[in-house]
Image 1 (spheres, rainbow, N blue to C red):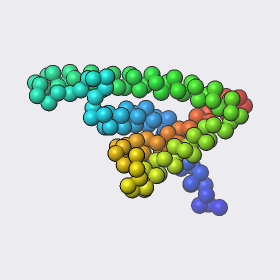
Image 2 (image 1 turned 90 degrees about the vertical axis):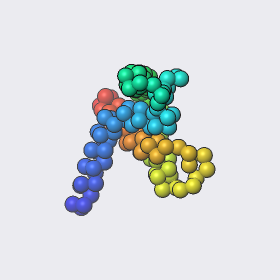
Image 3 (image 1 turned 90 degrees about the horizontal axis):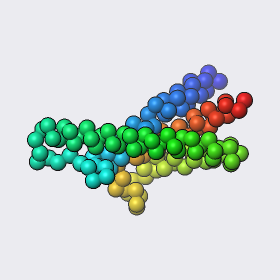
Image 4 (image 1 turned 135 degrees about the vertical axis):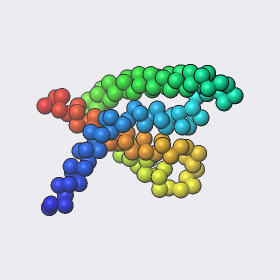
Length: 143
């Protein structure tokens, strides 16, 4: 019985940590996959250091703002999804996200996903825990 207690505590810690890591992981995974570009903005290697620094800050800032606002909207939509599916959608989404993350990390040479950055799979795992955390938060709102 004592072995179960740390495991449950670890899951609660992962859920809480996922709330902090989800957006930075999405930003990092996107920038890694896109070659550090967004909306046609990128860092040009032939430019001076000052211009490269400006380009870096611009790409990074636009990415954080764009992905952050998108995540904020999705965060609110998850509340509606959870309510309209009678508390099942977030648990199912968590299952899919965790499975996709594990498949990407351990399913070598899987067609269609072999070209994805490995950060997407870590992000998917964190997303799975985030869905569980969001479901618990929503349930606390109504109790």
